[in-house]
Image 1 (cartoon, rainbow, N blue to C red):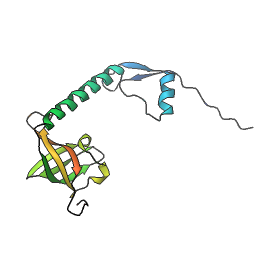
Image 2 (cartoon, rainbow, N blue to C red):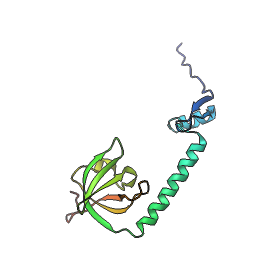
Image 3 (tube, one colour):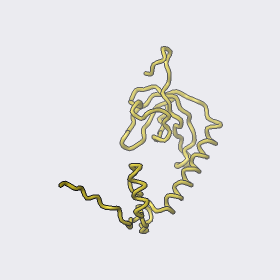
Image 4 (cartoon, one colour):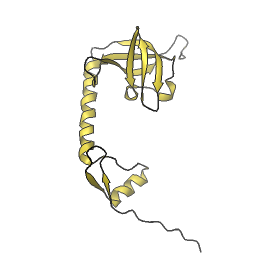
Length: 145
């Protein structure tokens, strides 16, 4: 007789990676996360709420900046998929772009690929510019590159 023992999740205390506060990860939350194959939370609820507000502010600032931006074309110089950012060259200017700015699959962004993008003032670095809404550029025959 071979029976498999399955242990029920128990409440856990986890330290927040941002503020260091201990927060409770209940057995019910663990079951919810396990059913949806989500990893354990690394931040407390307060830090997650702050990050969500920061992201909403960033998104609003990007949308405001895109109103005055014009679409340009350029070529990807380098993209670090493991780090989530890269650089492209457009009109002689080297521009930073984050993986959140991509509007295509990250594996399609390779050095030498032609892309279309908008140049906006950087939200995180005052005085700098960056590329936003990076998409693959279509050529005459409909293919990229």
